[in-house]
Amino acid sequence: MYAAAVEDLTYTVKEAGKDRTILNHISCFFEQGKIYTISGPSGSGKTTLLYAMAGLLDQVGGRVRIGETELLRERRRSRDRIRLEKIGMVFQNLNLFDFMNVEDNILIPYYLRKQRISMKVRRQVGEYLELLNLGQIQKKQISALSGGEQQRVAIIRAIVSAPQLILCDEPTASLDSKNVYIFMEALMKLQRESKSTIVIVTHDQRVFDYGDEKIRIVDGSLYQ
Ligand SMILES: Nc1ncnc2c1ncn2[C@@H]1O[C@H](COP(=O)(O)OP(=O)(O)O)[C@@H](O)[C@H]1O
Ligand SMILES: [Mg+2]
Image 1 (cartoon, rainbow, N blue to C red):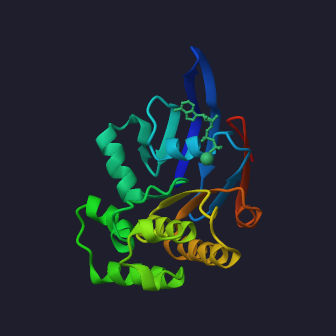
Image 2 (image 1 turned 60 degrees about the horizontal axis):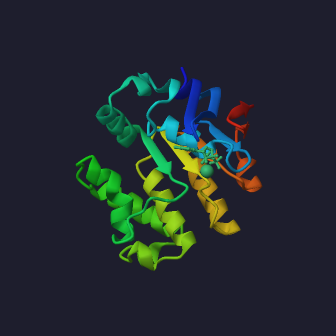
């Protein structure tokens, strides 16, 4: 049983009246508790692949399975719910709310799930803030943070609830070596203790090397 899978995934867009294939019949199976790293040239379809896996794109051909669920068969509301419950995502553009503080940005998934913020969750958030060297700034607004600090906030938001599937899009683009190492250690702890499945798109060779499976993507095709 796979934690997640994409099967014959195809994504085509219209460009100047012509079809352009962004994802070209991609199949890949993701085992529970493994780290998958994906690298490839700019424009090769990495971000599109993660968006498709998260059920964020319409008109994708093929199948995306998250556990037992076939995501693309679900209606949008149901896809949103599944994503919220099972997937943690670090977006390439971070998608943080500038006008909210660090702590609230991290807790957004809990607010959306209408979940009470338990002491355990607060403690977990506090631990991650300390671990990623953000302990002093949890009440600061996002707009007042550096790029590297913002990236670490986005990371904590994606992993704090130990989701089944963690999708990271260039998560270390603005991190220094020390924070890259801390981030990867945190992911490996989740892998061991929560059996999370982790998919990381990265240009960073240090991060790529952490993959249990290392995958290349070129022009919308995967090479494993
Ligand atoms: N909705 C869209 N409409 C048109 N082109 C798109 C769309 N989404 C992605 N693309 C194009 O698909 C290609 C792959 O994009 P992307 O997945 O962001 O690449 P990567 O993350 O590997 O740099 C790019 O050439 C991009 O311009
Ligand atoms: Mg990208």
